[in-house]
Length: 316
Image (cartoon, rainbow, N blue to C red; front, side):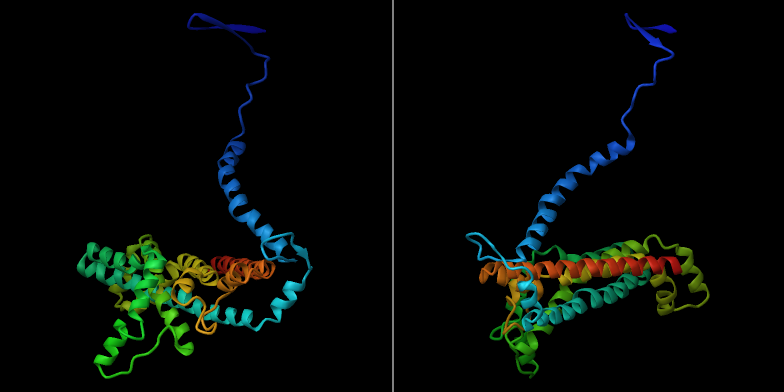
């Protein structure tokens, strides 16, 4: 059976028994949007990571054919004292780039949102937030050069201030005992704006009636901070801790600009240690093995963070 439908000047015959036209599945169309990112991930991350894993089982100086040596690089790696020292330095930088900025950022965001914004206006709070975030938009090379000038042992601004008040100057980046704490302090300054912005954004979605009810009940700023601010933006705290910890584990730019791993390896970290072996010593296989282990550590830390976040959300 067929019916005839006029459409302009053309007659179109449509059979009632004919199957409905096949339309592309929405699920398929959604997956098509992921193709560009999938290609970029494969080219920029996936393929280099696989190549790094394979090279980690070889001895290669960057020219000629690599020689397959199995697990020899990993056996050497786990007996290398400098490799473990670089991870110990990383723990200090996790403190400087993740733990301290998260805590200070939480306090600063709460003060800006709950005190400065209410007393001096939202524009003042936004201006201060932008000031805290400014180091994040500076190129690492520029920030490193500025801090190198400030911390110079001779003629540096910090030593000039210390000497003006009768204290001796120090070689902040050249002394083995001071270099790592100095780099850590710079990284706190560099990192602090990120948690402030994330936490202030999270505080925007907190119900204002909670703070109003707490103020009516006589709760001070610290009690509102503990019992309202922290529980309400717990998801943002997990995100900031995770991303900052990953950034600390793979930190390279500030180390390269400020100290290049020195003095005497006092500020060396796994990513820079891998770079040294890969490019400077042309021990490509050994450098690849270091990079592979560092990647696996980052993946494991990410998994543990996500698991802890899921448990926290289930129990809250």
